[in-house]
Image (cartoon, rainbow, N blue to C red; front, side, top):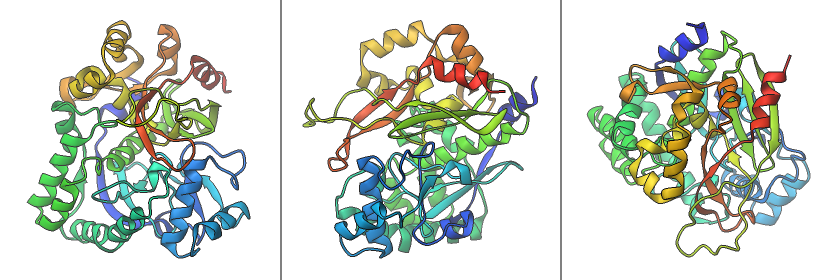
Length: 385
């Protein structure tokens, strides 16, 4: 077996700490990290990211109103750059700053990967809107959730994430569009360690566990990069303009395509005419590890949401044939690792489960969708020298 596949099969991601962007990533004040590859113009990102920058600036105290925050962005005083270049993954339109609390996850002796700690009891900046209620939830995250998590980990030690993720998969999560059962397992672990109040807050937030899954999947993929396997996709993400992937052989070399909008059912009351932003978010690492969009056949609630067309597609295009190697700790030893060569051999585009955000940067989450990167993206990856 290729060493990269051995690394995938033996992976064991663990949550080690909760830190901040300044300490973990060396971020300076006003610096912001975004999902996906570099933006065409960091001063004029897609509207959902603008809204995230506005709320982030108000939260950090860099501006006192929306106009002031927009002026900072357009004037180049909020440098935006890709999070994955610094070993961080961030969901949808969320931006990471020096003050952002971050989960620190590593797979064995592999590199540490970070992802933002989520807010509780409601959406945060990832939704790309300007709801002022987000500011209160960011304050609660910074002043209670993150310190409580940090103290718990300092007192009781790291958390093995595979058992929690496996529990979610076994009960019907795909670990991207749905993390309800994995989140419940996480809450049980927090209670077992004595963090009752924290557990109560997180129990009310079923998607809280998502960024932990992102960090775990990215850490597993980065542990496999050292072996440089041809065809193994190890990084992925969209910035609303471009969707990009990179491989184990040259992990810093993005290949990209236009980020078309994910497609799927809209939330009740969302009109069909509302435009959806292009694919955005680093959570694509979940799907390209082999979870998320590769597992809707094992996620009954998700399959019901997308209906018969997806069910027929899954029968015709089983995800297992584009994945690499089984993992013994996952239900049915589910395989991990997406091979670009298998994608092209079977002419089967992988599925990426992504939130559908309004392109106006005002209306936020509009539904749950599927983005399917084009085959030529994988041809570009294999054509790299």
